[in-house]
Image 1 (cartoon, rainbow, N blue to C red):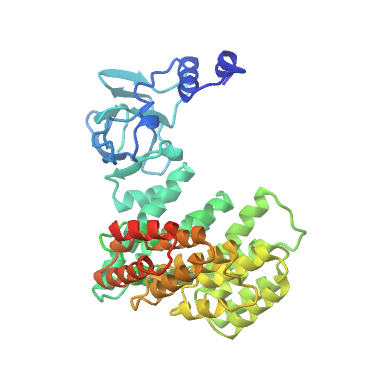
Image 2: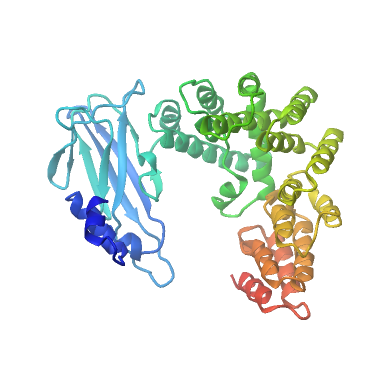
Length: 481
């Protein structure tokens, strides 16, 4: 940065000038780094590993490809920095002495100080790196700290991933190992669900999450992130034909199973992270609240009277919006008398703050309660709702579209509801209406029944009398997709 300012202070500068300053100040070889500025698409990096016990070497073979994008059918290799470390069988970082790459042996240790992480510069379509002086088979920890924005596919087995989840010193990779395992687990359970097989949760997965919950050395916000399952949309994106019902059933099953098996741990998290002190906005308090709130959400998913009472207690004693709203969201998972009373109480309390009322609308609209479309229809006539107010529309209608299980309901009720709203809204605010239509943009990702129902609504919208150009453009693009 010193060199950059020395060269360019007071000038109009380019990305290339900034790049040149970084390169020259560090005397670095950034061969094809500028491809990141000119080439579209996310690189896919594949890694395989092998260990040679006789030679005490560990080899990582990398290959990279960037998928074709419009106007760029052929791609060049990118400069991809992969920060890597190796874990020994006890879960400790191994000291790294040297790595052989491109015909040269490079020393990693600095002034005889051992290094536990190094940057592997992947710049070609295929290349390999050989670590020397590795005396037992390691588990590699790759792309530490998310060192490059790429998709990574490795040959790590499930037991390697469980090992990283329990031991990796890099928080990002520890989190990512859990996410990869969760995605694999959810996809395999989706297949079981579709075939009518009973759902069974892998005990190793429960054990992996328990080891994180019980590790007092970990940051509380990290724990909250690590025990959050991948979203339904993320899993549907990985499927050939998206199945919202199966994905929702599987994610709900895993949440309830974890809540049931880790109930004692979650209860102690709620208890140990309460605070009756005055609200202070700082990181330790934010992390504490994040962990308490996710533990409460897990517990409330069990639909147990005692746990609903616990969520109600947290709602009533909360000293800040974050905790009160999280308790409300936990209670709102399960329909019933308490659910209705607490939602009504929250509205009465905050009715004069329109931003909070928008959150209240969104919470109800996003609910996964079956047949929620009727509840959302009723909210359209709520005194605080106004179709002419864009933020109210985004909260209620946008919120509803983000509940896969209800928006993509098999009977088409979600699509029909959105179709009707778009036509009404178009006469008031075409820009907002066109944003709402885009919820239909991925209709071809679903099964034939849903495709036909969504297509029928798009055709109805396109043929509506006096339709604005904004909505026509988006709806016809969706149809042509």
